Length: 291
Image 1 (cartoon, rainbow, N blue to C red):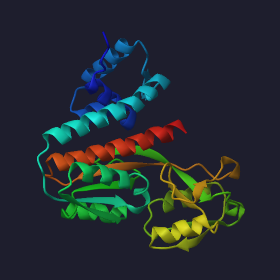
Image 2 (cartoon, rainbow, N blue to C red):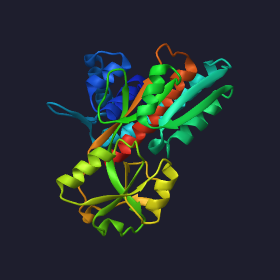
Image 3 (cartoon, rainbow, N blue to C red):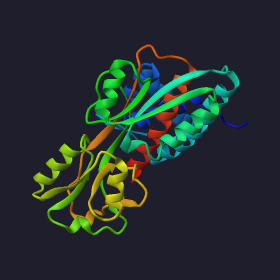
């Protein structure tokens, strides 16, 4: 008789992978920590493999766990899509999604495409701005769901991924050799302070060579090997690549991609767009951890 994997347990596994712990996963899934731990134990017993590395203060996936999480994401995506297609009414309306400029690519186009296919009569309004502006719009109630890039995990948010900041330049870049190091940033970029602090701690002089309000200007400057930029791993713009470790640039801290929803927001369209965002950025976090 063919064995069948428990979808609830697979969802718990993926949530643990995305959030980095059983307790956090339990909070998101509205389960007790012991219930999630029992799901993992039963899943391991059914497959006769160890899925989690359990240490005193942290939980991580084993290689088998990472492999299963990849399959689980696909299975859950199909499950959720089937349920949505077969049970969802023909919803109408408008949903406003806010995303910082620097994490729109490459995930948001796919999220919007999937959502439009499932809710063709719901109009999505995409707002791309800085994190500080999106938080103000959320407070004012003018957006429904937003993503932010933040150093912390404030109360009221759901952290979708924690990704390291990385140095990027043109393909086969040489500008990293220049001193002072030439940097390109947008005026309100939250990455500026930690990047400049890391350079100063490493004793590397730097110069703000490009400061532009539009991300396309920054990307063009970097792709032309005129300056270096810092992005979250997995969000590289076209024509750019990570600067090799041999360049000797300082390691940079990680940032959280947090999701907020407007108070009182409910209904299948809102739930679905959040699920798609979780899947997209959760997968990005898993890929970044594997690199």
